[in-house]
Image (tube, rainbow, N blue to C red; front, top):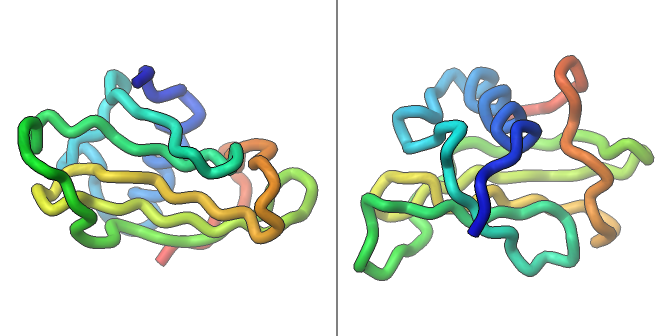
Length: 114
């Protein structure tokens, strides 16, 4: 586990605003602990969830999903998922060519959110 990076936090905050939702309601803060997922370097994260400590966490519902273009022009899709306790579960990132993500989109970049 490690602390969420400023770039990851900013990206998730922008996604939530675009979706008209609040990530603070589901446990995101600058002190959020995350664990990179084994996805070949595409940037997916699993979130620590104190509210579900001691229980078997499961995927609950999709909080927001969307797409953006990586620095090299490759399409990337993502999903922010909640667990069955209503807290952040994972940021699932998928680059269509399965190569490592070059970077999360910077402020002002086009990110489609639904």
